[in-house]
Length: 336
Ligand code: SER
Image 1 (cartoon, rainbow, N blue to C red):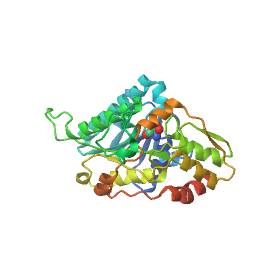
Image 2 (tube, rainbow, N blue to C red):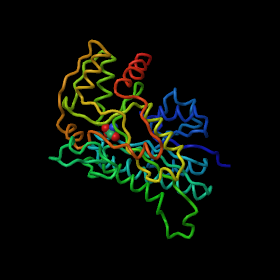
Image 3 (cartoon, rainbow, N blue to C red):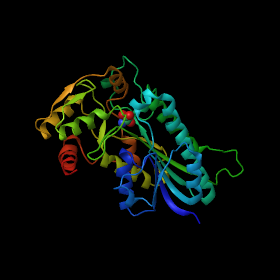
Image 4 (cartoon, rainbow, N blue to C red):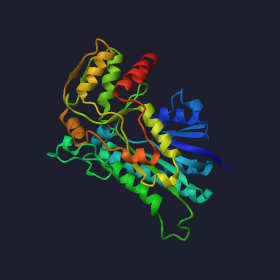
């Protein structure tokens, strides 16, 4: 007998920690975690099984397929944007081939138990690419279908996987004899930069916000790798986790757009520095620009239009820029 479960890939990552806690507190089905690293001790009690394995290893996925009856997959495993520029082929394998493997697992599961498998995919602001010479302030808040010309391997991977997900949800094997009898209910959020008080990102380009805050909290000086006037959208990790659970809980016919922008605030790096100095007296933040990482952030919009998420699943960020520090980051980092 296969056991009912939810599968979370990238379980030990920045987002996996918060999501697994939230899913386990909501008391749903048992959670199976998959990650190339062993899950942290703090995560294990929330997992029915913690599998150390690679999403590119078909044996690992076959074993999961044979032992569990999966109702939802949260596919978080990925290489982030800066790291992907150093290893584009590996990024493509992990980010694209890995996602295709998980979508295939969802199809196999839906076929075998006859119910739709929900599939959450964390997409990214990196799917956008604003060409040089176009002013971001003139574009303003960008909608889901504008400027989809990513300039990074990670952005290309995320955009293609969005399309793969929608294809699996709407058209996959429509010529097959059993077409229409299995369904992958794909849902994606294009996240802005995420800031957590507990975990730190690894290999992303929006990492300067988290790095600046955590360095200040630990009394270390920080050299920010983008210019002071650089602005991009961000949100706190608890808001991001809540967004995932709200989108996944929404009735399928109300989230038919399947891919949604969200954000909470879009400070400049100078705004971040000022907030960090206010909340962590003695913080030292300097600017030492890395032109390549700067170019990546320059290709991302400074704001996104989240009206579709507000309309379809009543999305609302919990924290603005000030309350993110006062209510969440400062107390949680100090407690941590
Ligand atoms: N935070 C990600 C990165 O910087 C973007 O989604 O790579």
